[in-house]
Amino acid sequence: MPKATDTVLGHCILRALIHDQGGEEATKAKFGPGSSGSKWSALRVATKVTPKASRVATFIVLWAVAMRDEKADEFSITEYQRYWNENERQAYRVQKEFRELWPEYETPNELARQIVRHIDRRMGKRDAARLPMTLRIEAAVS
Image 1 (cartoon, rainbow, N blue to C red):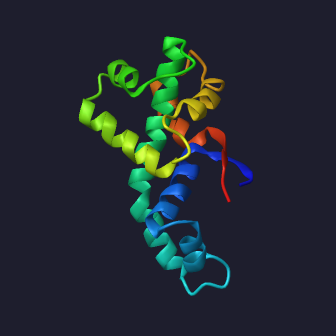
Image 2: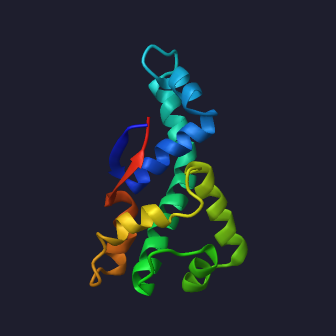
């Protein structure tokens, strides 16, 4: 698959759309060039998958922020949970969603390392909250 650079949230929305439709080929058949799918139905599906995509994008960025603060090159779900004082069930639930959208990764470590390079220590909470929508990552897409 070729590499593309887009926002974390953009990648997650596209991946959630593909996951929801049953794979890449099914998505192309329904919404690709020459398909019978309308722009309205594509918009409805994108709207449906956006909450999940947003949770996963936030998870990736929070993972990166924790790695940066802990000066770690890798993190585990336990370390993430401890750092953010996250409920164990919630942490595993969002990790499961991450793995559904990013099946090639066990954890967000590789993506988080890309993000860590862009995070400034003086960054405020408001700026950190915008990261999923503004930070660009490189990931394989078709």
